[in-house]
Length: 94
Image (cartoon, rainbow, N blue to C red; front, side, top):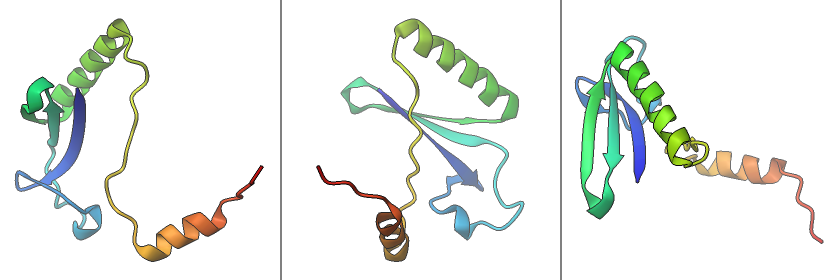
């Protein structure tokens, strides 16, 4: 039903990339699949396996007619970033 991916450090998911210094992340990626009924499947995939899984999931998505994948960032912006984003938008009221 849903899938999320996260970088890992020492096998644990990284909440904020800003907290990680160069070279401190694992080579694998944590992938969580949300299944019907609320079940969750977590896989830790390394380089080649991850690329193979991506191709497999993309082919499955196309065959199932699910549409394009949506990328969402989960890190929450601070108040200044939210204000800058809102104030930089051109808003038109009709």
